[in-house]
Image 1 (tube, helix red, strand yellow):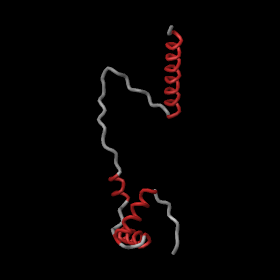
Image 2 (image 1 turned 45 degrees about the vertical axis):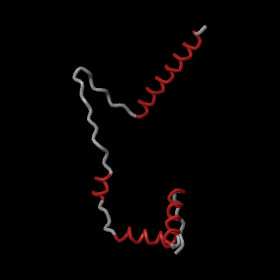
Image 3 (image 1 turned 90 degrees about the horizontal axis):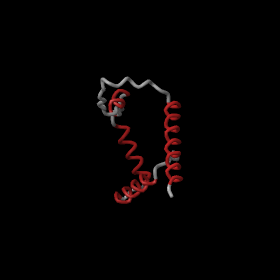
Length: 99
């Protein structure tokens, strides 16, 4: 059966090189790789999720500081934009104040 697969260029080159080194065709190499991958037992959803967990990050609580209120992405973006505008104004003021 014929099909089309989009591969990253680097991966395609590596596969093509391996096929040439082994004296086979790209089709034979890809078929062998897919077959060997399908012969392994399928990973369960739980196994996949445990492999993708992010590492724990320690966050120290400072007793003197009040908790930061929860904010939406839109609110956070607005805060960052305001800070950026203020920084640009400050730079412009410094530039204008030079002799």
